[in-house]
Amino acid sequence: MSSLLPVEEGFFSSAPVRYTDVFAIPRPAEEVWGEFVSDTPLEWCRGLSIRWTSARPFAVGTTREAKSLGGAMKLQERYFIWEEGRRQSFYVTAANVPVFSRFAEDYVIEPDGAERCRLTWTFALEPTPLGRFGGPVNGIVFKRLFADTRRHFHAS
Image 1 (cartoon, one colour):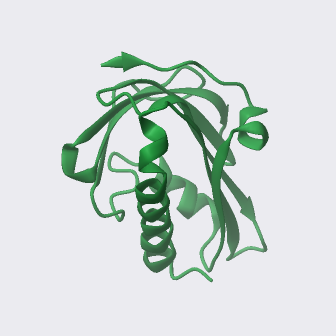
Image 2 (tube, one colour):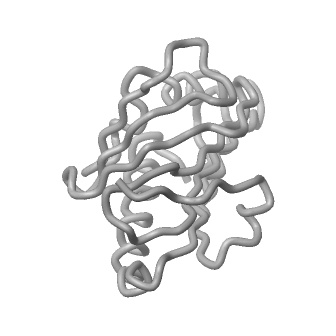
Image 3 (tube, helix red, strand yellow):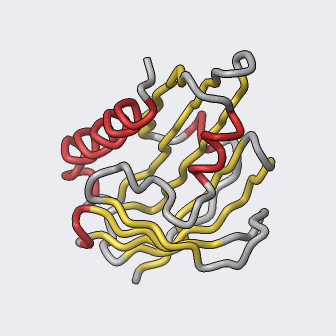
């Protein structure tokens, strides 16, 4: 595993590469938050497997492991923002493939009435020289994760 650099909140707006999508979800914010902190978060995303490596209750400092691309990429993640019921953000601390020097994700879930919410999901990354070659593939992977999420939540 190669180590990645930690990030701060400002990285979500200053990262060299960013992917963001906003989802209008016809479900209460509490339900959607519950899926993001379940034992199998993001299970609806094809090719992605996540395992919490910290005990509940989750907070800043919580860790998890992710496998993507059918297990070809393995990531270790650490949460640095945790606003229970509303926002969670992590950065990748290590990866088995040295394609990023910094990588972070941000999930913001905001109520939009009693039975609706809005999810904003952002990927922020800084590729290594090797990782720059994967730019087109990254775009496809992140857009697929967004599409899977839109389908799962029947979001517009």
